[in-house]
Image (tube, rainbow, N blue to C red):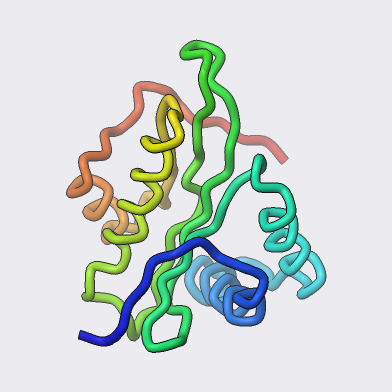
Length: 150
């Protein structure tokens, strides 16, 4: 197998991470392309403010091929920190190597090692591959309904 590392994103990753996030936002989810300034700003915010969240990257032979983003919040009911797995993405040509599982497991290990109450996440109703992964990793559908407003 090729040289693979799952690690915390750092300053040097920004150019490649920016490209990965564009693939995730624009190509995969078909959303409008954010400005480079705004997307770089988000990455930089997480690097500069670790209390806000963390990004993990999958690096294979010196190239970033996937990432996961955890944002941090609090659970009043459990009186502890909680994490939101907002993004988990692996480029199409790197799929089938269990990188999604490895990124997910890295996030799970992080929250357990840092005494978070839990990790929550959402996925699109039609993203059956992600749902299969989350079920395989032990995820359960929440009893809570998710609402949103713009």
